[in-house]
Image 1 (cartoon, rainbow, N blue to C red):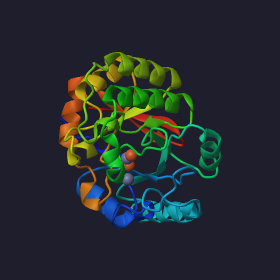
Image 2 (cartoon, rainbow, N blue to C red):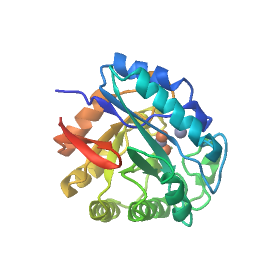
Image 3 (cartoon, protein in one colour):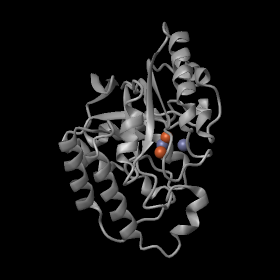
Length: 268
Ligand code: ZN
Ligand code: FE
Ligand code: FE
Ligand code: ZN
């Protein structure tokens, strides 16, 4: 069975919490037998900006130069795409749209890391989980996922059950929330990713769960793969497990992007 050869989620030191130069990520990908990668570092933020979370707006030119340099260096070895992982924050849709149009991107990953001002997946904000109504947190999260797709800002929805990162589980079944989310994703034409970083987090499970991925597959949502590497050695991490998950959910292919459009489909 072919292991996915495309890793579409990796970071650079510009975000303030990743290590290693982009060429080291690319080298690792090449050595691991990948044929295509995309850099999707944390896009500048308008609300809750923090040099430990995301690059600054004035670093965007550096980012593009860095990726372009790696693209040229690896031209004969690897296809290198340029992307961003951008936060979805209610009220900042138009700011986000504007800066995304300032450069060319192959795709943009839309991620929900904040419920209101609460960075629910930030280890520094973890204590804020104490005393929360977990079911409500999950419902709020899924609602934001739907809004993020409806914003039409993004091509791929990032780690679509990140809310489970620290292991807090809802008492009620979330299937109807996920089904409603899948329908919106379908209507908005976005893809989802299998993100293996969850295996390196307290929850110790990929994003999303098998049950959720089955629902996305049934709805016909296109799929990508991402390691969410914040270190060159994480590039392509656990893609064997990601392949198993994709197939178990019913996926028979995944997609690549170019200039913010699906470029090709690759069989699994
Ligand atoms: Zn990060
Ligand atoms: Fe993220
Ligand atoms: Fe990421
Ligand atoms: Zn991420």
